[in-house]
Structures are given as C-alpha cells and as structure tokens.
Image (cartoon, rainbow, N blue to C red; front, side, top):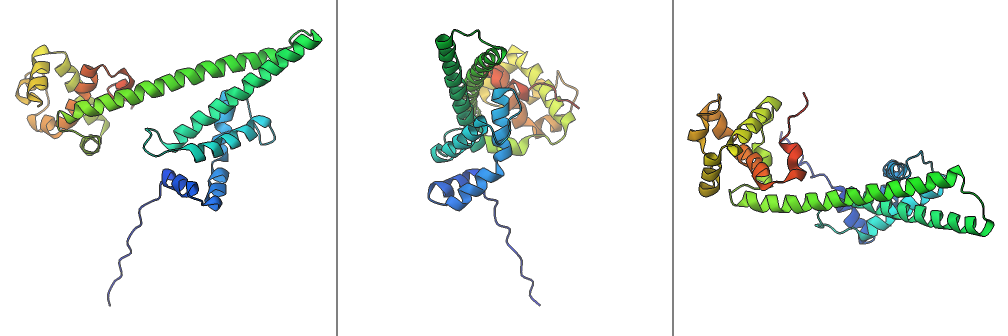
Length: 247
C-alpha cells in the first residue's frame, strides 16, 4: 500500500497577511485587529504610563492607529510590521496627549484656574512620552544604519547574515569562547592587519594566544570574524552581540 506523504506548507508571516489585507481581504483585517488587541493596549499603556482599558479614548486611538499602520505598511522598508505599528500607535497617542494638553491650557487661560494635579500629570506624561519616542526612533534609525554598514563589511569577507546564522555556535560556552578569541584578535594590531589584508582569520597566529584547538577556531571561523568586525567597525548598536551572555 502506497504511503502518501503530506507536504508541510510554509507558515504565512504576519507581513504576508498584511499584504493580503491591503489588496482587499477585510475579513482578515478584522481578525488581525482582534488578535492584536492586547498588543495595542500594551503599547498605549506604555506611552501613557498607566493602565488602559477598552473604554478609554486612548485605546480607541490605538485601534485606529493600528489600522492606519496596516494601510501604510510597506514590505522591505527595514522593519517588521509590529515595529512599524508600534511607532504609528505611539505617534498618534503622543499627538492626542499634546492636543489634550493644549486644550487644558486654553481652558485654564479662560477660567484663570490653577492647574490641578491631573493636568500636571498629563504634562509630565506628554514630555516623558515625547522624549522616549524620540530616543527610541533615534536608536532604531542608528541601529538600521549600522546593520546595513555591517552587512556590507561582512560581504568583503564572504559572509552573509544567512550563512552567519548557520555558523553561530549553538552552545553558550562555545559562543563565549568565540567572543574571547575575537577580543584577543582586535586587541592585537598584527592580527587585525592580517584580518583586514587577507580577509581571512589568522588561525595559526591566534593559536599562540588561545588555549582551544585549531579545529575549534576553524569550525567557528565565520562567527569569530563577524564578532571581530563589530569591534573594529565601532558598531555600538550591535554591542549586545559581543557582550557576555547570562547563564
């Protein structure tokens, strides 16, 4: 009896679902908005720095902003949809807080009332949210720019992000050992010169400074080079990748 092998269909990404919505699948739009209501509420609550429930104006604005993000998102723009949606929601909530703050100030001028604790809290939240939003967007921009520059640098050494993911050591101790080797390399000008000129890892020379075997270095060659380039390129946004991991 012939056995029928079922072919596993590839999972559909959220970004692909957003594309389907943009070409007219309104049923899917409603489903996505419903599924991601907790995400929307979480982002809004973080900006407002307080608990937000479904009855509040801020939550409604978050829903509209999420829907706006669905309409405006473009694939290949350098970020995942949820990152983009987070940014749009934050922007709309901050705009709302600013408008409310201006309205409250206008009422204050008309009635010559002393600004109460609630207005002070809103003003504080507005300033805090605006600062956090600015810093976050600045970090995202810098990180994307550094990732692009890092990707170009890796190409000179015949390394791609895809190949790097395959050569990343699975065990924490192996990754930590590779980081130590990369640190030794970038601290030695002769080894750095060899790496830059030959576009290869100076394995023979490294063996004079490390206790691991040649086989270990060769097995993690691409990973060590990639870590070394983070140091040498000054990619501080990628620094977490070369810092010790928590066991």
